[in-house]
Image (cartoon, rainbow, N blue to C red; front, side, top):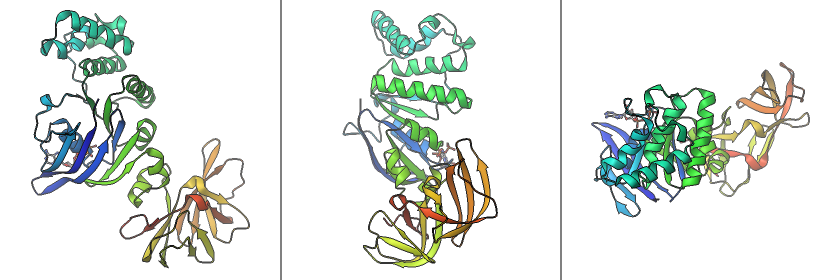
Length: 354
Ligand code: ATP
Protein backbone atom coordinates (compact mmCIF):
# COMPACT_ATOMS: atom_id res chain seq x y z
CA UNK A 1 0.00 0.00 0.00
CA UNK A 2 1.20 3.51 -0.69
CA UNK A 3 0.63 7.20 -0.30
CA UNK A 4 1.38 9.08 -3.53
CA UNK A 5 2.15 12.79 -3.43
CA UNK A 6 2.33 14.93 -6.54
CA UNK A 7 4.04 18.29 -6.08
CA UNK A 8 4.06 20.91 -8.85
CA UNK A 9 4.26 18.17 -11.46
CA UNK A 10 4.73 19.45 -14.99
CA UNK A 11 5.13 17.95 -18.45
CA UNK A 12 6.06 19.71 -21.66
CA UNK A 13 6.18 18.09 -25.10
CA UNK A 14 8.31 20.59 -27.02
CA UNK A 15 6.52 23.95 -26.85
CA UNK A 16 3.26 22.32 -25.68
CA UNK A 17 2.52 22.04 -21.95
CA UNK A 18 0.43 18.90 -21.36
CA UNK A 19 0.43 19.11 -17.53
CA UNK A 20 0.87 22.38 -15.64
CA UNK A 21 2.08 22.40 -12.03
CA UNK A 22 -0.27 19.77 -10.60
CA UNK A 23 -0.32 19.27 -6.84
CA UNK A 24 -2.42 16.68 -4.97
CA UNK A 25 -2.08 13.76 -2.59
CA UNK A 26 -3.47 10.23 -2.93
CA UNK A 27 -3.81 8.64 0.48
CA UNK A 28 -2.85 5.08 1.27
CA UNK A 29 -5.60 2.69 0.12
CA UNK A 30 -7.65 5.24 -1.79
CA UNK A 31 -9.48 4.59 -5.03
CA UNK A 32 -8.49 7.77 -6.79
CA UNK A 33 -9.89 9.10 -10.08
CA UNK A 34 -8.11 11.30 -12.61
CA UNK A 35 -11.05 12.81 -14.52
CA UNK A 36 -11.27 15.20 -17.45
CA UNK A 37 -12.07 15.56 -21.14
CA UNK A 38 -9.92 14.09 -23.89
CA UNK A 39 -6.48 15.70 -24.08
CA UNK A 40 -6.60 17.31 -20.61
CA UNK A 41 -3.41 15.56 -19.48
CA UNK A 42 -4.74 12.76 -17.27
CA UNK A 43 -2.93 9.93 -19.08
CA UNK A 44 0.31 11.93 -19.10
CA UNK A 45 -0.08 12.50 -15.34
CA UNK A 46 -0.64 8.79 -14.73
CA UNK A 47 2.28 7.82 -16.97
CA UNK A 48 4.58 10.13 -15.00
CA UNK A 49 3.40 8.57 -11.72
CA UNK A 50 4.03 5.12 -13.17
CA UNK A 51 7.50 5.96 -14.50
CA UNK A 52 6.56 5.63 -18.19
CA UNK A 53 7.13 9.33 -18.85
CA UNK A 54 9.75 11.65 -17.33
CA UNK A 55 8.43 14.87 -15.71
CA UNK A 56 9.69 18.22 -17.01
CA UNK A 57 9.39 19.61 -13.48
CA UNK A 58 8.07 18.89 -10.00
CA UNK A 59 8.18 15.82 -7.79
CA UNK A 60 6.40 12.49 -7.34
CA UNK A 61 6.66 10.83 -3.94
CA UNK A 62 5.60 7.25 -3.28
CA UNK A 63 5.61 6.72 0.48
CA UNK A 64 7.77 9.83 0.94
CA UNK A 65 10.42 8.61 -1.49
CA UNK A 66 10.97 10.87 -4.52
CA UNK A 67 10.61 8.59 -7.57
CA UNK A 68 10.22 11.09 -10.45
CA UNK A 69 13.38 9.97 -12.25
CA UNK A 70 13.14 6.27 -11.34
CA UNK A 71 12.14 3.71 -14.00
CA UNK A 72 8.76 1.98 -13.71
CA UNK A 73 10.41 -1.30 -12.72
CA UNK A 74 11.73 0.27 -9.51
CA UNK A 75 8.42 1.76 -8.34
CA UNK A 76 6.63 -1.44 -7.29
CA UNK A 77 3.41 -0.56 -9.09
CA UNK A 78 1.19 -2.41 -11.57
CA UNK A 79 -0.18 -0.72 -14.67
CA UNK A 80 -3.46 -1.99 -16.16
CA UNK A 81 -3.95 -0.76 -19.73
CA UNK A 82 -7.18 -0.38 -21.66
CA UNK A 83 -6.12 -2.99 -24.19
CA UNK A 84 -5.16 -5.83 -21.95
CA UNK A 85 -1.94 -7.27 -23.23
CA UNK A 86 -2.25 -10.96 -22.39
CA UNK A 87 -0.12 -13.70 -23.94
CA UNK A 88 -2.71 -15.37 -26.22
CA UNK A 89 -0.80 -18.64 -26.67
CA UNK A 90 -0.55 -19.21 -22.89
CA UNK A 91 -3.30 -20.47 -20.62
CA UNK A 92 -4.76 -18.47 -17.73
CA UNK A 93 -2.43 -20.01 -15.14
CA UNK A 94 0.70 -19.11 -17.14
CA UNK A 95 -0.53 -15.58 -17.85
CA UNK A 96 -1.15 -14.90 -14.17
CA UNK A 97 2.06 -16.65 -13.05
CA UNK A 98 4.25 -14.78 -15.50
CA UNK A 99 5.14 -11.70 -13.38
CA UNK A 100 6.12 -13.94 -10.45
CA UNK A 101 8.13 -16.39 -12.56
CA UNK A 102 10.00 -13.56 -14.26
CA UNK A 103 10.89 -12.24 -10.78
CA UNK A 104 12.32 -15.67 -9.88
CA UNK A 105 9.67 -16.54 -7.28
CA UNK A 106 9.91 -20.22 -6.16
CA UNK A 107 7.39 -22.55 -7.92
CA UNK A 108 5.49 -23.50 -4.75
CA UNK A 109 4.99 -19.85 -3.86
CA UNK A 110 3.81 -19.09 -7.42
CA UNK A 111 1.21 -21.89 -7.20
CA UNK A 112 -0.01 -20.59 -3.84
CA UNK A 113 -0.29 -16.97 -5.01
CA UNK A 114 -2.04 -17.89 -8.28
CA UNK A 115 -4.57 -20.03 -6.38
CA UNK A 116 -5.28 -17.09 -4.09
CA UNK A 117 -5.73 -14.64 -6.96
CA UNK A 118 -8.06 -16.82 -9.06
CA UNK A 119 -10.18 -17.35 -5.96
CA UNK A 120 -10.48 -13.59 -5.39
CA UNK A 121 -11.42 -13.08 -9.05
CA UNK A 122 -13.69 -16.16 -9.13
CA UNK A 123 -11.96 -17.64 -12.21
CA UNK A 124 -10.68 -20.91 -10.67
CA UNK A 125 -12.36 -23.00 -13.35
CA UNK A 126 -10.56 -21.12 -16.14
CA UNK A 127 -7.01 -21.90 -14.97
CA UNK A 128 -6.13 -24.33 -17.76
CA UNK A 129 -8.00 -22.59 -20.56
CA UNK A 130 -6.04 -20.66 -23.25
CA UNK A 131 -6.81 -16.95 -22.94
CA UNK A 132 -7.45 -16.67 -26.69
CA UNK A 133 -10.91 -18.20 -26.39
CA UNK A 134 -12.12 -16.30 -23.32
CA UNK A 135 -14.89 -13.68 -23.23
CA UNK A 136 -13.99 -10.00 -22.81
CA UNK A 137 -14.91 -10.01 -19.14
CA UNK A 138 -12.86 -13.10 -18.35
CA UNK A 139 -9.85 -11.70 -20.21
CA UNK A 140 -10.28 -8.58 -18.10
CA UNK A 141 -10.23 -10.68 -14.93
CA UNK A 142 -7.10 -12.53 -16.08
CA UNK A 143 -5.38 -9.21 -16.77
CA UNK A 144 -6.35 -8.01 -13.32
CA UNK A 145 -5.08 -11.27 -11.89
CA UNK A 146 -1.74 -10.68 -13.53
CA UNK A 147 -1.64 -7.17 -12.05
CA UNK A 148 -2.59 -8.14 -8.48
CA UNK A 149 -0.53 -11.33 -8.17
CA UNK A 150 2.66 -9.38 -7.41
CA UNK A 151 0.93 -7.44 -4.62
CA UNK A 152 2.30 -4.11 -5.83
CA UNK A 153 2.14 -0.97 -3.71
CA UNK A 154 -0.33 0.63 -6.11
CA UNK A 155 -2.41 -0.03 -9.22
CA UNK A 156 -2.52 2.42 -12.10
CA UNK A 157 -5.38 1.98 -14.53
CA UNK A 158 -5.95 3.93 -17.74
CA UNK A 159 -9.60 3.72 -18.85
CA UNK A 160 -9.54 -0.03 -18.13
CA UNK A 161 -13.23 -0.43 -19.00
CA UNK A 162 -13.18 1.83 -22.05
CA UNK A 163 -13.57 -0.94 -24.61
CA UNK A 164 -16.56 -2.62 -22.95
CA UNK A 165 -20.23 -2.07 -23.75
CA UNK A 166 -22.27 0.02 -21.30
CA UNK A 167 -23.98 -2.77 -19.36
CA UNK A 168 -20.90 -4.90 -18.91
CA UNK A 169 -18.85 -1.85 -18.10
CA UNK A 170 -21.08 -1.06 -15.13
CA UNK A 171 -20.82 -4.63 -13.90
CA UNK A 172 -17.00 -4.64 -14.17
CA UNK A 173 -16.84 -1.24 -12.46
CA UNK A 174 -18.66 -2.74 -9.47
CA UNK A 175 -16.32 -5.75 -9.50
CA UNK A 176 -13.24 -3.56 -9.63
CA UNK A 177 -14.42 -1.43 -6.75
CA UNK A 178 -15.28 -4.54 -4.71
CA UNK A 179 -11.87 -6.02 -5.48
CA UNK A 180 -10.22 -2.82 -4.32
CA UNK A 181 -12.25 -2.83 -1.10
CA UNK A 182 -11.12 -6.41 -0.38
CA UNK A 183 -7.46 -5.77 -1.15
CA UNK A 184 -7.16 -2.17 0.00
CA UNK A 185 -4.31 -1.23 -2.38
CA UNK A 186 -3.99 2.37 -3.55
CA UNK A 187 -5.55 2.61 -7.00
CA UNK A 188 -5.23 5.49 -9.48
CA UNK A 189 -7.79 5.32 -12.27
CA UNK A 190 -8.03 7.50 -15.38
CA UNK A 191 -11.46 8.17 -16.90
CA UNK A 192 -13.27 10.82 -18.96
CA UNK A 193 -16.62 9.51 -17.66
CA UNK A 194 -17.87 11.75 -14.85
CA UNK A 195 -20.47 9.22 -13.72
CA UNK A 196 -17.87 6.44 -13.44
CA UNK A 197 -15.63 8.81 -11.43
CA UNK A 198 -18.45 9.76 -9.06
CA UNK A 199 -19.59 6.16 -8.58
CA UNK A 200 -16.20 4.55 -8.04
CA UNK A 201 -13.89 7.18 -6.59
CA UNK A 202 -13.02 7.96 -2.99
CA UNK A 203 -11.51 11.15 -4.35
CA UNK A 204 -11.40 12.83 -7.74
CA UNK A 205 -9.02 15.20 -9.46
CA UNK A 206 -10.73 17.12 -12.26
CA UNK A 207 -8.31 18.32 -14.98
CA UNK A 208 -8.78 20.64 -17.93
CA UNK A 209 -6.11 21.82 -20.41
CA UNK A 210 -3.37 20.39 -18.21
CA UNK A 211 -4.59 22.23 -15.10
CA UNK A 212 -6.01 20.69 -11.91
CA UNK A 213 -9.36 22.46 -11.58
CA UNK A 214 -10.43 20.75 -8.34
CA UNK A 215 -9.48 17.88 -6.07
CA UNK A 216 -11.69 16.31 -3.40
CA UNK A 217 -14.40 13.80 -2.50
CA UNK A 218 -17.14 13.31 -5.15
CA UNK A 219 -19.90 14.97 -3.11
CA UNK A 220 -17.85 18.10 -2.46
CA UNK A 221 -17.00 18.39 -6.15
CA UNK A 222 -20.63 17.92 -7.15
CA UNK A 223 -22.08 20.26 -4.51
CA UNK A 224 -19.38 22.94 -4.44
CA UNK A 225 -17.56 23.06 -7.78
CA UNK A 226 -14.50 25.32 -7.58
CA UNK A 227 -14.88 26.47 -11.19
CA UNK A 228 -17.55 26.75 -13.87
CA UNK A 229 -15.69 24.09 -15.84
CA UNK A 230 -16.12 21.55 -13.01
CA UNK A 231 -19.76 22.60 -12.53
CA UNK A 232 -20.47 21.82 -16.18
CA UNK A 233 -18.32 18.75 -16.57
CA UNK A 234 -19.92 16.98 -13.59
CA UNK A 235 -23.63 16.23 -13.50
CA UNK A 236 -26.14 15.48 -16.23
CA UNK A 237 -27.71 17.81 -17.17
CA UNK A 238 -24.87 20.04 -15.94
CA UNK A 239 -25.16 22.94 -13.50
CA UNK A 240 -27.15 25.94 -14.82
CA UNK A 241 -25.69 29.43 -14.88
CA UNK A 242 -27.76 32.61 -14.61
CA UNK A 243 -25.51 35.40 -15.90
CA UNK A 244 -25.70 38.99 -14.67
CA UNK A 245 -23.63 42.12 -14.15
CA UNK A 246 -23.35 43.17 -10.56
CA UNK A 247 -21.41 44.23 -7.53
CA UNK A 248 -21.07 41.94 -4.56
CA UNK A 249 -19.88 43.26 -1.20
CA UNK A 250 -17.53 41.10 0.83
CA UNK A 251 -19.54 39.17 3.42
CA UNK A 252 -22.83 39.52 1.49
CA UNK A 253 -25.20 36.57 1.76
CA UNK A 254 -27.27 37.07 -1.34
CA UNK A 255 -27.51 38.47 -4.85
CA UNK A 256 -30.26 40.29 -6.72
CA UNK A 257 -31.36 39.31 -10.22
CA UNK A 258 -33.93 41.79 -11.58
CA UNK A 259 -36.81 41.85 -9.12
CA UNK A 260 -35.77 38.72 -7.22
CA UNK A 261 -33.31 38.24 -4.34
CA UNK A 262 -31.45 34.95 -3.98
CA UNK A 263 -29.80 33.97 -0.71
CA UNK A 264 -26.53 32.05 -1.01
CA UNK A 265 -25.31 29.47 1.54
CA UNK A 266 -22.06 31.21 2.51
CA UNK A 267 -20.64 34.69 2.77
CA UNK A 268 -19.41 36.01 -0.56
CA UNK A 269 -16.08 37.48 -1.59
CA UNK A 270 -16.32 41.03 -2.92
CA UNK A 271 -16.64 41.21 -6.69
CA UNK A 272 -17.57 43.58 -9.43
CA UNK A 273 -18.39 42.67 -13.01
CA UNK A 274 -19.89 39.70 -14.74
CA UNK A 275 -21.23 37.00 -12.42
CA UNK A 276 -22.84 33.60 -12.88
CA UNK A 277 -25.26 32.20 -10.30
CA UNK A 278 -24.94 28.41 -10.45
CA UNK A 279 -27.72 25.96 -9.61
CA UNK A 280 -28.13 22.27 -10.34
CA UNK A 281 -31.37 21.25 -12.16
CA UNK A 282 -32.65 19.29 -9.14
CA UNK A 283 -32.48 22.47 -7.02
CA UNK A 284 -34.80 24.44 -9.30
CA UNK A 285 -38.54 24.40 -8.50
CA UNK A 286 -41.50 25.81 -10.37
CA UNK A 287 -43.65 27.88 -8.03
CA UNK A 288 -46.56 30.14 -8.98
CA UNK A 289 -45.78 32.71 -6.30
CA UNK A 290 -42.02 33.19 -6.98
CA UNK A 291 -41.17 36.65 -8.39
CA UNK A 292 -38.39 35.35 -10.67
CA UNK A 293 -40.10 34.24 -13.88
CA UNK A 294 -39.34 32.17 -16.94
CA UNK A 295 -41.09 30.65 -19.94
CA UNK A 296 -41.21 26.89 -20.40
CA UNK A 297 -39.50 26.16 -23.72
CA UNK A 298 -39.41 22.37 -23.65
CA UNK A 299 -39.89 19.32 -21.47
CA UNK A 300 -38.22 15.94 -21.60
CA UNK A 301 -39.86 12.95 -19.92
CA UNK A 302 -37.43 10.67 -18.03
CA UNK A 303 -39.77 8.33 -16.11
CA UNK A 304 -40.03 9.50 -12.50
CA UNK A 305 -38.59 12.91 -13.34
CA UNK A 306 -38.80 15.34 -16.23
CA UNK A 307 -36.34 18.00 -17.40
CA UNK A 308 -37.95 21.38 -18.01
CA UNK A 309 -36.07 23.96 -20.10
CA UNK A 310 -36.92 27.55 -19.17
CA UNK A 311 -36.00 30.88 -20.78
CA UNK A 312 -35.16 33.57 -18.20
CA UNK A 313 -33.84 37.12 -18.45
CA UNK A 314 -30.43 35.70 -17.44
CA UNK A 315 -30.19 32.78 -19.81
CA UNK A 316 -31.76 29.35 -20.17
CA UNK A 317 -32.27 27.13 -17.16
CA UNK A 318 -33.03 23.42 -16.79
CA UNK A 319 -35.13 22.12 -13.89
CA UNK A 320 -35.43 18.47 -12.88
CA UNK A 321 -38.88 18.07 -11.36
CA UNK A 322 -41.26 15.20 -10.68
CA UNK A 323 -43.08 13.90 -13.76
CA UNK A 324 -46.25 14.23 -11.69
CA UNK A 325 -45.83 18.02 -11.52
CA UNK A 326 -47.72 19.96 -14.18
CA UNK A 327 -45.67 21.90 -16.77
CA UNK A 328 -46.98 23.27 -20.06
CA UNK A 329 -44.74 24.41 -22.90
CA UNK A 330 -45.31 28.12 -23.60
CA UNK A 331 -46.47 28.90 -20.05
CA UNK A 332 -44.67 31.54 -17.92
CA UNK A 333 -43.97 30.28 -14.40
CA UNK A 334 -42.30 31.39 -11.17
CA UNK A 335 -38.87 29.89 -10.48
CA UNK A 336 -37.52 29.08 -7.02
CA UNK A 337 -33.87 28.15 -6.40
CA UNK A 338 -32.79 26.15 -3.33
CA UNK A 339 -30.90 28.74 -1.24
CA UNK A 340 -28.77 26.04 0.44
CA UNK A 341 -27.37 24.85 -2.88
CA UNK A 342 -26.50 27.95 -4.89
CA UNK A 343 -23.00 28.67 -6.19
CA UNK A 344 -21.67 31.98 -7.44
CA UNK A 345 -18.86 32.36 -9.97
CA UNK A 346 -16.82 35.14 -11.45
CA UNK A 347 -18.07 34.72 -15.04
CA UNK A 348 -14.76 35.86 -16.53
CA UNK A 349 -12.27 33.74 -14.57
CA UNK A 350 -14.81 30.97 -13.93
CA UNK A 351 -13.74 30.71 -10.26
CA UNK A 352 -16.26 30.23 -7.44
CA UNK A 353 -16.77 33.23 -5.15
CA UNK A 354 -18.20 31.36 -2.14
P1 ATP B 1 -7.26 11.03 -23.67
O1 ATP B 1 -8.39 10.64 -22.80
O2 ATP B 1 -7.68 11.48 -25.04
O3 ATP B 1 -6.09 10.08 -23.68
P2 ATP B 1 -5.80 12.62 -21.76
O4 ATP B 1 -6.49 13.57 -20.87
O5 ATP B 1 -5.37 11.35 -21.18
O6 ATP B 1 -6.69 12.39 -23.04
P3 ATP B 1 -3.08 12.96 -22.55
O7 ATP B 1 -3.01 11.68 -23.30
O8 ATP B 1 -2.39 13.06 -21.25
O9 ATP B 1 -4.57 13.42 -22.37
O10 ATP B 1 -2.54 14.11 -23.50
C1 ATP B 1 -2.50 15.47 -23.10
C2 ATP B 1 -2.01 16.30 -24.27
O11 ATP B 1 -0.63 16.02 -24.50
C3 ATP B 1 -2.73 16.01 -25.57
O12 ATP B 1 -2.94 17.23 -26.25
C4 ATP B 1 -1.77 15.12 -26.31
O13 ATP B 1 -1.90 15.31 -27.72
C5 ATP B 1 -0.43 15.62 -25.83
N1 ATP B 1 0.57 14.55 -25.84
C6 ATP B 1 0.52 13.39 -25.16
N2 ATP B 1 1.61 12.64 -25.37
C7 ATP B 1 2.38 13.34 -26.24
C8 ATP B 1 3.64 13.12 -26.86
N3 ATP B 1 4.33 12.00 -26.63
N4 ATP B 1 4.12 14.07 -27.68
C9 ATP B 1 3.43 15.20 -27.92
N5 ATP B 1 2.23 15.49 -27.35
C10 ATP B 1 1.72 14.59 -26.54
